[in-house]
Length: 357
Ligand SMILES: *Cc1c(COP(=O)(O)O)cnc(C)c1O
Image (cartoon, rainbow, N blue to C red; front, side, top):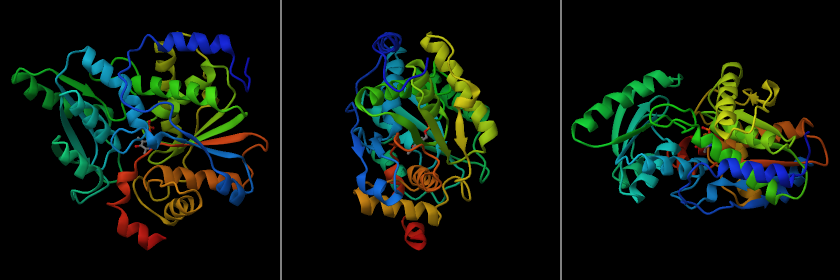
């Protein structure tokens, strides 16, 4: 039965299922939950809150650092000494993985696809990767197309072969850390977000009508959906797509949901209609800063003193504002926006942001 309040019995069962997955503490939990009174007033409702996943305390924070607690525990459990992943040039995921790896004496190797964001100037996350001494290997990719799982994994395998020849033990993990592939056998990143849903429900005493967040590789969304349904909460999880068309991407999110439910072992609760992906805020595509993005970023900074990022969270915020103005959210129910981090991307995008403001 769906409900707006957390049931003690369900919560206990959920926490028991989660406790089977080892977690390496890395971040400050719970992340703050902030009431956005000024933003709420500007929008004329709904009651809007922000879950500050940007304030995890690991490097510049973000949703990848919450995922990293479970992923790092798995890496350490497998006794790896090297971690290999791929992503785009200014990836938040790569910075978070490299940071966590370095803290435990592991070598990070990053395969960075110059997909959308060139030139490769040492700015933003790329600067931070360099300061950590992560080994960076560049690959060219087609503009506007994301790198497929198969292609990404084949690059990781090639690097792993080299690394193994030197007697090292590599751990291979796909971008985003949620789709089980490479050395990661369970959707650990999504499980971390199922736990984030429980953390939110424990703390927010009002009825949550909707959660809105930027969705990119699908793990955050899948985890939030599975967490909500496993806890019996009827909250709508709305993923604002920053890179993908909704139909095929929705299928991927549902696939990760199923794998996450399977890992939890509490049953199958998620219905296909629970996966809500909106792709009308994509603008010109991944990583392209337009007026809607620059406007949302600047407005939230001025109203609330919170800095969003131009690739993910400002796009999702532009979506939330548009939905609120259209009366999409039922009155009397709270809307929680997940600030998933990504702020280092402000700086490589500085000129474009100023142009668009
Ligand atoms: C990766 C990322 C997302 C999307 O999360 P997924 O789990 O990959 O869908 C959202 N916001 C920021 C800032 C990110 O770095």
